Length: 199
Image 1 (tube, rainbow, N blue to C red):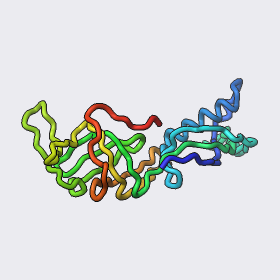
Image 2: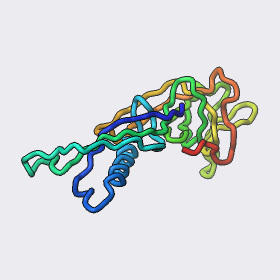
Image 3: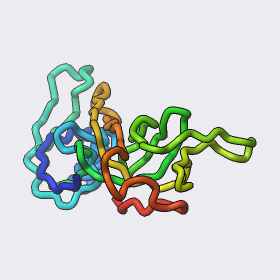
Image 4: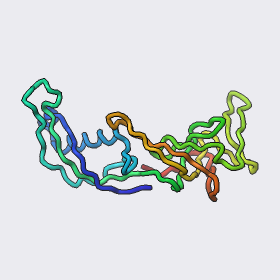
C-alpha cells in the first residue's frame, strides 16, 4: 500500500561539511543519503521519496572535550518531513516482472520489492517446463498455453510478508510470499516489458 507519512528523525552531520555551504542543503543531502542506505523501515515500508520538508530544528552539539573521540565535530539536527512510502501487506494485489525461474517457483520484482517468491504450489494448473536448448530458458505453463517466464509481467496477491532489519539499519528489506491461488485476474498479464508504476 502506498502512503504519505510524516517522519521526524535526527540527522547527524560533520561540522566540517557545513563550512561555507548552505546548511539546509547539506542536511537535506545527508537525510536523503540516510534514507537511501536504510531503504525501508518496519513501520512505514520502503522509502520512495521525500515530498516535503516540514522543519529543521536547532543543532545539538555532540562535541565532547576529548578531541580523539569519534563523535567530536558531529552536529545533530532534528528534521521533520513527509515521505511517500510503500508497505506490502497480506492481501495486496501487486504486479511485477519475473526475474528468475527455478523448478519450484519464480522470483518477481515489483517496484522497490526485490524478493517476491511465487511457489509452484501457489500456481494452480501450472507445470514446470525444462529448457530444451541453451538458448531457451525454463518456464511455467498452463494448459491454456499461458506462460510465466523471465521477463513476463505477473499480477499476484501477497500471501505473507517478512521484514528483515540489517545491522546499522543499512539496506533493510521486505520479503514476500506470493500466490495466484483462489483469485481472479491474476497471473501473467504481458509478455513485453513491465508496466510497474513509477516510484
